[in-house]
Amino acid sequence: MRRPRVFPSTRLLLILALATAPGCSRTEKPVVIGAKKFTESVILAEMGVALARDAGAEARRDDLGGTPALWLALTQGDIDAYPEYTGTITRQILKADPPDLAAALAEKGVRLGRPMGFRNNYALGMRKDVAAELGITKTSDLRDHPDLRCGFIHEFLDRPDGWPGVRARYNLPQTNVQGMNHTLAYRGVVEKALDVTEVYTTDGEIAQYDLLVLPDDLHFFPSYEAVWLYRADLGARHPEVVDRLRRLEGKITEPEMQRMNAAVQGEKRDEAQVAVEFLRSKLGVDAVGSAEGTLAGRVLATTGEHLLLVVPSLLAAIAIAVPLGIVAARRPTLGRFVLGAVGLLQTIPSLALLLFMIPVMMWLIGRGTGAPPAVAALTLYSLLPIVRNTHAGLTGVPRSLRESAEALGLPPLAILRRVELPLAAPTILAGVRTAAVINVGTATLGGFIGAGGYGRPILRGIDKFDVPLMLEGAIPAALLAVAIEALFGLIERAVSRRG
Image (cartoon, rainbow, N blue to C red; front, side, top):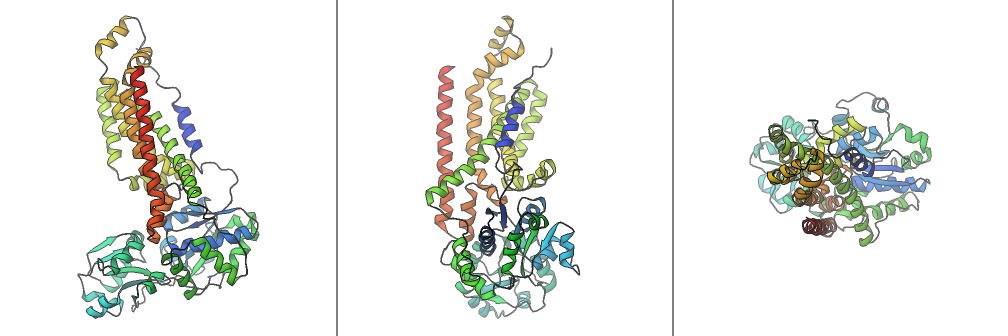
């Protein structure tokens, strides 16, 4: 007997999911300035946006994760420029110290601007009273205190110019080392939950919390001069934008940068406003940064972005999971493998799955940041409840009903379509309902790779330790999950009554 072809619209649904994912189109886009997820990078990126707009170009800012995500986005063309530091370029991006840094980057299609005028070096910091009590005045003194509790951002834990290199150079014995958000690590030091954290020497929190920056007495850390990295083709497409960006070269001092960081971190001011004020006072540029807008406008925008992650991934998950559930019900041996495979996907931490999809989508469609990897990861994460419920619904159909349908002469496809799927529909919809609710919450992680949505204000709020900003993403996400739960509940009841 020929195996029936199930759901011929599967391919159409997959194409629809990809087409509706934001950022998948290769149409003409504005000048995109990238930013890492910390205050200083966002302020500098906002200066870039304002200067690009002053040059007459349409421009916007994209917040991505750490250095690898920004570098990937720059080289693949998702962003046009972003602020970087020379030490990071040599130690983490190139993993070499070439004699001509600009030439080494030019080989990769990237141009290097001149330093903006300040350095933001890595250092280790402590509370002054704790350091005085232990007799610690410089980094090498940490060697005598193995019980110190350390908290560093995850990137610092992995970078060769971060904790691994510092520990090796200074022969440090500390083992109580945690990975955490930069702002939360500062709070941990202030509240004495931690003893040591990494600092950037232009951080506003240093003065705000009156912390001690430990001198790098063995001269481990390289010089981190702030520079622009931009794509070579930006000069051809928008030469006036490159000219405007380069107006910042040599114009920002370290105290000025520290004051701007403090204005955002301590006073909870908007990064765009701080950036525009500096440009107006320093360069005489009356430019416009990213408009903060009203609370309602911001929530509406992030809701749209979030739905453009949730809806395509849910459609794709349905298109993949329902046929898999049918196969699992029809072929019990193969079904155990299918259920085990989708169950295994569910055990992978959602953030790890999201990051794993970056190189996968880079290989498949040439784009490894933004919406595509987020949609792909959400699709995979949504498979288990739909596959499992489809399998349970179909295997729960009484055998006598199938035999009656066969006795009436119905072919297998007609039995599936007219008998089994209608009877299993409430159970299948319950799985879709579960997947949709999970999807809404998991999609907030898309903010780590510039996919937008509710994750954007949540992550910015964590970075600034701004609770209202965090709630601006968290509360709408919860309300959306409740709304989807209620919607699918109504659909399930309607289907059950019809059945």
